[in-house]
Length: 319
Image (cartoon, rainbow, N blue to C red; front, side, top):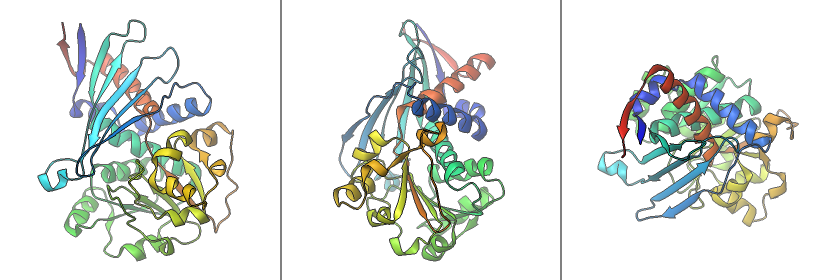
């Protein structure tokens, strides 16, 4: 049984921000059209606010099954290692035999950022200022992704570690911001890429017309955005079935009666035209990226096709 192994280097050589964007457009369009097979994800809490996760999906009923298994360990920052680790496995569509094992961290960063910027194309296509809060892998991937969807926008970065913010900004043609409140107040798009369990911005900082994207609120205990903001927002999510149970701010806002779950819109519905947003200039829009398996399935499909065409990766015999 021969399996193709693709490292992070292999993935990055293939999965460009443009290709990532195209894969995520297919993922959410298929999801919105009811074509994708998207079971619930599995979350297993661990010590020190860590959580392991498992996603599994097919972009179509006859497509290969793709699964991602990994963990998020915020305490790893103190250990000097990355907070997120994962692997993606791809099974043959006909036989079910393992076909590929792919470094999941590299895929996750690129596909998550591509999905966020895909959503911003729908929600804030004319944004001139984009603020990314965070300095980790997700923040870096988002800065790269915005150069594809919003090439004329000014990119800004804020991090609790000012030196890290300067380093990230310097490597991504962005400006390092030192005053988070003022940066939020003046940004058209604010993207939160943190692992914080509590809000990193305040409701009062968000002015009319701003679009706020939360990438780090992917579990019920992770609330990097104040739930009170949702009460005065148009709420859009990557996938309602997951967001209603797994996105901390969404769960809290619904529980407090501040948000009607029936008024929360799916990204896929916007892409297929099943839903529309009649956004006024003064409206605040919040977008929540929980992350779903179909994103990995779509990403793995294009990565593996390209890898097989150009011979990328290594072959391993599993017996």
